[in-house]
Image (cartoon, rainbow, N blue to C red; front, side, top):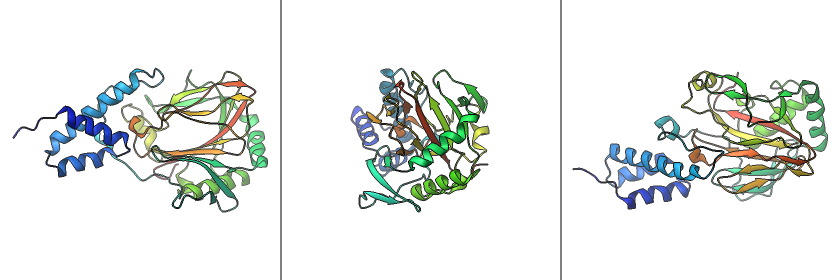
Length: 294
């Protein structure tokens, strides 16, 4: 029997995706409802692809994907997660209490107050100054690094655990997001002058790029990000999430955490660093990987 994919089914798929249902859950529901597995999978991929293309058509900074999501892109993995059951106002980070300022479910975004002390912010800035250079981005076409005109900042990486300050912050983050220290990349510090920005992008590595398998050998995909604000620019410099209309103000000592359980735009984790309009901005970023990062 031939099954016909109707406009009503396509609309239902879009509604489920918009509501935060994972693609594999939608696929399972379709099969349970009587759809043949191959028909359901093809309908799901085509519908999501076309929907994402429509969303991306009006957003020049984030082109729509050229092809339907692959099975690897649709598969979800375990991710770092902050314990928010019971809607706590504060979280025990081991050596200090951290406030919950904003919590978004889909995508998972949590704004944290007081993750770092002012002294720790100053310490990261001063330790990074002698090592700053023009920021590079990972080149997924080759697995190397490159200068990217979308990222106009200066930056450096601390080695994981290279100082008492770095170890203390790494342990605090690991406790908060329930993720092993060894699964994290080294903390990166970035400095943005007036006009500097990082245009909207995703932190995961694009599975379609030829260099991604090489990158993934060092710990697998990125699955979570913590951006820590080390100072407060007079104007501008917020962290934007265009898909959900959220902008997080850069407040000294605060941070924003977000996770992404598959390397696909459907995670709604498109984000960027808005241009600094007055003053300068200092941030520290911690990325988490699926496995031990070496």
